[in-house]
Amino acid sequence: MKTELCDQLGIELPIFGFSHCRDVVVEVSKAGGMGVLGAAKFTPEQLEIELAWIDEHIEGRPYGIDLLLPSGGKNEQDEYPALADLERQIPRQHLDFVEALLEEYQVPEFTKEEAAAADEARVELCVKGYDSQMLFEVALEHELSLFVSALGTPPEDICSACRIRGIKVAAMAGSAKHARRHRDGGVDIIIAQGCEAGGHTGEISTMVLVPEIVDAVHPIPVLAAGGIGCGRQIAAALALGAEGAWIGSLWLCTEESELSSVIKQKLLAAKSTDTMISRYLSGKPVRQLRTAWLNAWDEEDSPGCLPRPLMHLTVVKALERIERFTQNNGSRAGELVGTPVGQIVGRIDSESSVRQLIHELVAEYLGTAERIEKLTERSQD
Image 1 (tube, rainbow, N blue to C red):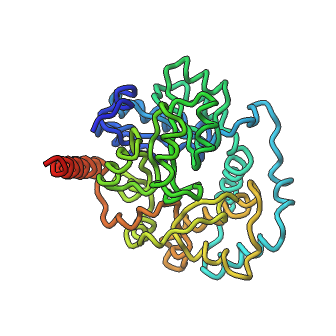
Image 2 (cartoon, helix red, strand yellow):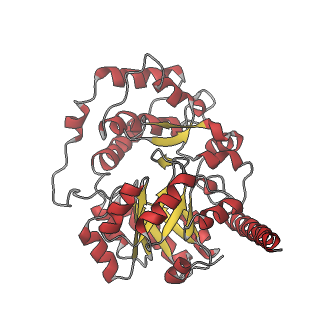
C-alpha cells in the first residue's frame, strides 16, 4: 500500500486525515498515515496551544496543517475593516431573518459575557480570518512536514519558507486549471478534491477529476479527495493515478472527535443524499449536512446570499448560539445545528476509534488489491 509519496514524507500509509480536532490528527499519524490539522478558525494564540499539544503527543510522527491562505492577503501591520463598518453593510432583512429563525426554534439568547466573546470571535473569523499569515508564522515554529493551502495557490514567500525548512507544500484543486496554476506556483503536491467532499468544493466528481489532474500535472504527486471512506475507494484512487487519499468526513464520528453528541447522532442517521451545497455559511459553496437552518435559507422568503465576509458575519453569532444550546431542553436548536460533511456520510453508521477505522481501511484495500490481482491473473489464463 506504500507509495512513493509515503517514502518522501516518512509515513507508512497513503492516508491523509484532515480534521479540526487535534486528537484525530495525532491518532491518524500514530496509525501510520498523516494527520492534517484544519486551522483556519483558530486565533494565533489558540493555534500555538493546539500545535504544542500535538508536538507533545504525536511521538515524533509527521503531521501537517491546512490553512485558508489566499495570495495577496493582508500583513500583520495592515488595518482591518472595523466590525461596526462591516455590520452597517448587512441589510436589515438578513438580520431580521436570522432572528426570526432563532425565535421560531426557541434558541435562547446569550448572556452579556457570551455575547461579548462571540463578538470578539466574529472579528477574528469574519474580518481577520481570511488572512492566515500570522497563523502560518505560528505553524513554522513547529515540526511540520506538510503545509496545505485550502484556498488558492500559496504565494512564493510561503512556498520558499516551507522549502527552506523541508516542509512539503500542497494545495487543493477542483479543476485541472486550478491544478496547473498550483504546479506553476511551485506547489509540491496537488489535492484533487471532487464535489462529493465536505466543506468548500467545486462541481466535478472525484472519479472524473483525479485522472484529469494526474495527467495535467505529471509528475507532481496527486492526492484524491472527496467521497473516500473505505478501502475500495482508496484502491480506486490509487488506480486513477493518485499517490494517496485525503480523507476528512470519515473522522467526524470517531471517539476522538470533539463534535457534540447531537451532531454525531445526526451524522450517524444521515444518508448520502442528506448533504447539500449551500452558500449560507461563508458566502462560498460549502457541502454540509442538510438542516432546518439551510432549508429555511433556500425558501422563497429568504433574503438570499451576501458576499463574504458579510454572509459569514451575518450568521456566525447565530450559529454559535445554536451550537451552544443544542442540548437545552426548552430549545429546538438541535434541528438547526449541522456541520460541513461529504456525501460519504451515508457510510458512517457507528462510532469507533481512528485507529480502528484505519485498520478497516487497510484491510479492505488489501482485499480489493488481491481481488484485482486475481482478475488480472484470470485474464492471462
